[in-house]
Image 1 (tube, one colour):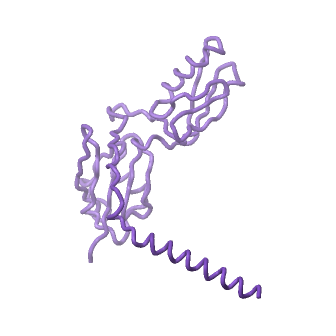
Image 2 (image 1 turned 90 degrees about the vertical axis):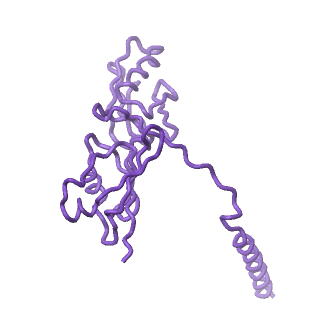
Image 3 (image 1 turned 135 degrees about the vertical axis):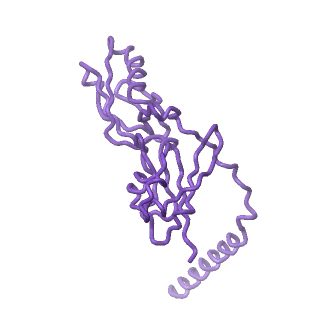
Length: 217
């Protein structure tokens, strides 16, 4: 008797699950409202010749307050770009240099500490999304990487392990925000990586997106 009830219960569950699948299957992406296009975020580092690292969510900061070990410590920048310390809550950290954040913390700490002197070092580097270089498609390890001063396309490809065997590197594209508009540029990555043509090497800027398509054989 118990076995019959278990069988009936399983059949009912199967019927309900099938109905859910049928309803979901009838709803296609054409039936769903479109989302607005992503907001264009230009790099916060406009003067690339005087590049300075900017703090971003996920960065691990070592904050030292001279003569006040109780106000010092290691802190992680939250996903909302804020950081909280032992004495100060919710200070904007993302998009600032360590020096700028140090001065901001000194102002906040002056309520509790006389003439505070703050120094900040970064233990783990992540940086804001607007400063990261993102590589998509047929790279060996496609991912977002931290921009480094004077970075070139060759440096980026070393970071992601080069091209896959299926990459069409000479049809790769670079997307860059110029004057608040996205613009696309062609890359000759096969010439650079496979033929050693150094003329195909180009400067990379914070926020660049590199898309490497698959070759059609």
